[in-house]
Length: 107
Image 1 (cartoon, one colour):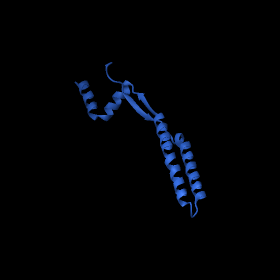
Image 2 (cartoon, helix red, strand yellow):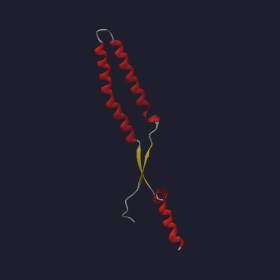
Image 3 (cartoon, one colour):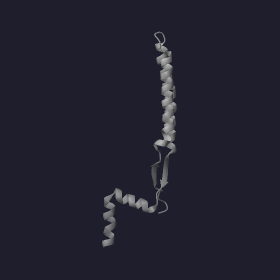
Image 4 (cartoon, one colour):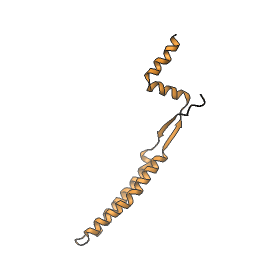
């Protein structure tokens, strides 16, 4: 019995409050880039305006994705299951195990 590998349960404890600040910062970046685009907008600087918003979005997107992924990974936990939880989970997943356990007790 001691040679059996330990069974674990994966739990994600991420809530909306954990990423709320990141979303607010992303919205601020979007609004600043739009304000910059409108400030550069004229008949002669339209290309600069589009280039500015493109550069801001392309440079900020990897940081946003990195922040989301690291926040998610920090909220994943692996909790070891106890013996009773493991047997209960196995019996719920496999209905045959209930009938196999009941058969030896009847005889």
